[in-house]
Length: 217
Image (cartoon, rainbow, N blue to C red; front, side, top):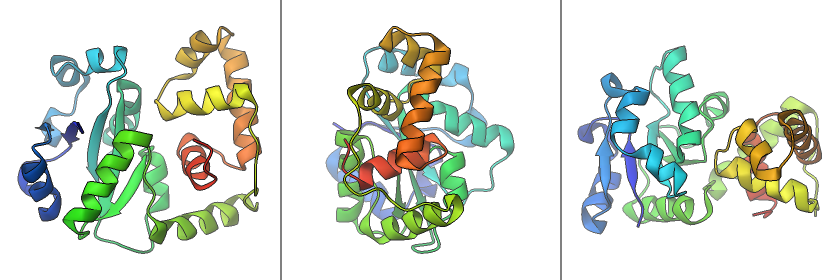
């Protein structure tokens, strides 16, 4: 079952999302901004979730005015096993830079239907990412424009690159990837760089987005 970590008060979540949580009986923990600290996460048992690879799904309001330290906190939650679904009042002109800074695993329009919210939550719970069709082309075009590249059709990853991609999806750090692969941190970074180069991306969020778009999972 989807386990939700909402980085807000209950009243701040979109209405259809709240209704879905109630109807489905999803376990949910509300974490207002004053509780955004590592000690709070440890007390909630997220460290245990990471060790057993049980996934939490974090809900983050993309329209929030976050400080640099808050953005860093939300981004680093990935290594605790939290996959973040961002929502916004904007259905188009998605705030790509903010999605990237938060290392988001997906996006949904704040006013989406309860059915759409259900599909988004279960998609991230099952596959680790969710990028709806109505933002795929927009973000892809922006990535291509920024990096002056085009999407590779039929890209093939090596076994090692597939291992690195799966580790990135799970939010593993460079050190954790090196331990998993049995290589040095330097070599792990080289594998990550080779993966980014093949996918024509510059960071982990872009990597996950492109991999989902190219059906590499």
